[in-house]
Amino acid sequence: GLHFDELNKLRVLEPEVAAQTGPLPEECRAFVDKTAEFQKIVGSLIELVDQLAKAAESEKMKAIGARNLLKSIAKQREAQEQQLQALIAEKKMQLERYRIEYETLCKIEADQNEFIDQFIFQK
Image (cartoon, one colour):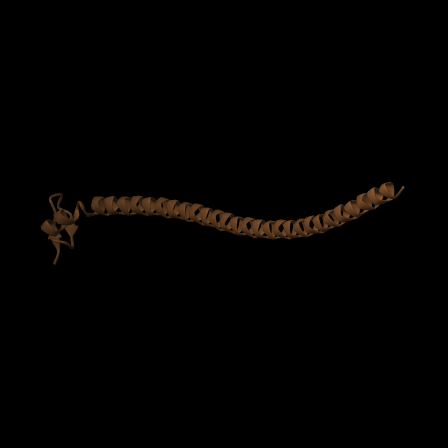
């Protein structure tokens, strides 16, 4: 199992096997470099995905806030509409009271004018 190489050094591996394993360290270095580059790319991809996730979450929260604001505005408008409807009803009642009061005053005026006319004719 012992062999001599071209420099007459004693070797455990056969010269052919040793020649085939010669480029192995370079291939290993290239593989390690590619693996490191891959890890670097994956790390930047993960960082980018995290940023996109944060941006999506931020937009989601903005959308939820806008939806809640829209709901509250709709509720405010409903409440305002109810207040205006109540005010309209109150004004209608007031108008009806004023109309009745006007009609009553017109009757009183007509009665007083008639009384005045009768009083003037009696003299």
